[in-house]
Amino acid sequence: MNEQHPFHYQEWIERLRRSSHHSHQQLERQQWKVSLAVLIFLALSIQEFQLSMNDPGWALRPVLAATPVHFLPLDWVTAEVDWGYFTPSEEDGLVEPEAEKFPSTKAVASATPVKPTPKPAAVAAAEAPVSDKRQRQLKYIERFAKVAQGEMEKFGIPASITLAQGLLESDAGKSVLASRSNNHFGIKCFEKNCSRGHCTNFSDDSHKDFFRKFGTAWESYRAHSLFLQRAHYQFLYQLKSTDYQGWAKGLQKAGYATDQQYAQKLIRLIEELGLQKYDQ
Image 1 (tube, helix red, strand yellow):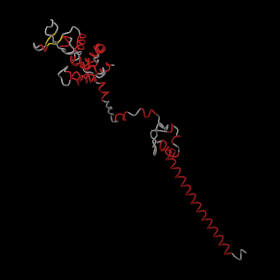
Image 2 (cartoon, rainbow, N blue to C red; image 1 turned 90 degrees about the vertical axis):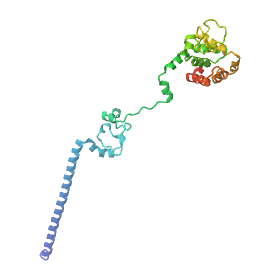
Image 3 (cartoon, one colour; image 1 turned 180 degrees about the vertical axis):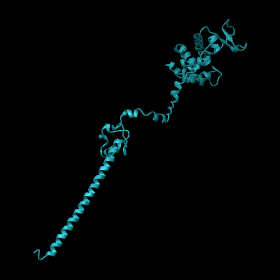
Image 4 (cartoon, rainbow, N blue to C red; image 1 turned 30 degrees about the vertical axis):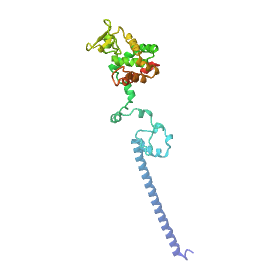
């Protein structure tokens, strides 16, 4: 058989040899590609290892991308990590509180100073230094509040009105008439035959400029209450004892003083110093 077809047999052998040679070449090529891929992988692994040694955060990026935020251990977090799409917070458990409570000196120095919030006008006024005049007024009220209330119980004149008139007429006890003559209400002397030391004047010999002199300030307060018992002041007693505004306007209307702003001055003193509380 082989002798009958020698040509075909040899041709088949040759084809087999060529096919084997071709397969061997393809295998060598595949081995070469695999070796090259292994070398590339090893090179990249070495480079990645070196980078991770110098920058722990670089190696952590792929882990962070695949790991839920709330399950990251606290000791994995470093200040050099590039957080990417989220920002760590104390609520997440990724930032220790001390890192935020104690900022660096550089950050504090560069921060813009915060302007203090202005206080409300009422609070600022309450904290403002008390003037000398207001201090004198408060001392005057402390001294004569009980006296004014006693006169109110006896004569029905609001204590706030009595105190306000005393403050205004005597300049809180500082006027010459109050300091020398104990006259706190500017009460004039209308007697024609008064005894020695009964009154005094400060301008001329006109009898209209003579003012009463009192031994004590209390006597001045009682004289004020008796003075307001005159007939043309009687309409005031129809008002309530708490109606200090009505009393102030009534005194001006009855001619207690010639100052056209007398009533407003009394009302302002009562409201600024809270004298109406003594009418209760």
